[in-house]
Length: 339
Image (cartoon, rainbow, N blue to C red; front, top):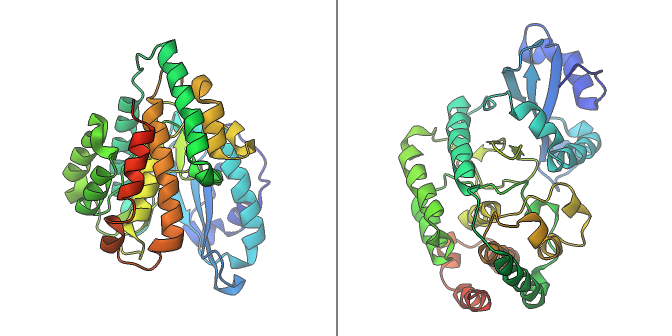
């Protein structure tokens, strides 16, 4: 990435406030990796927004500062606009590919500490490379999978209206660090853990449980604005406080969605729904690289998760939501996608 004029609202703010917030001289180049606003739906004066940025010093490609800048409520409209722009850039892999080839895992200063990100990124990259092994599907297999996609559209049309955030930016295999007994029970019950690679995720996560900082948790939301991905390596840029009050099933849902999503680039953003894009572009995008039945099964399962959470799971303890309500639905899914 070459030097360029400081044009964005955030970069201008950074130029004006660098010494006060970070100390020392401002770097020669600044690249905003991700912006995000927290507290959506709150009154503007109560909303706390944050900017996560990656700053380069001179010609060096090594990051030396990643920061959260709180209390940006007065800038919420501009923040939202630029966040949307950056998300689109991630979807096209322009921003992610530009820095990822030369930059190590970004540091995240805060209660989670830099160790968490480095551990996450190392495992994340390893599992992605493992998941990218080429398959041995034939043209007949592709035709069968495409027919299954059409069947999925008919069977689960009610779940088809998903938003932009429901598809991640690559064939990314991810893991999260919620208590493994909760995740393990839910994932195995859902049939997600039938694949050897998912078992590897469990094993690696168990081995790393003792090395992570207790205040950090990666909450499974591997969307285009939370993961930088260039087709061979990926970095997780989004963490939450470990003690945040959230139903663990949401994390399971985000994780499973991230496991087997297709690499659409930017085109899927313009489709009527992500589900429709999956069915219509299955043979072109996925080809021999993935098991279509598994992808479709998982995608449909996630939509049932979303639907149930919205209407039945709000405010309930996870243990009361995990077991009863989706067993029948899962059996129907298994039947629909039986080979």
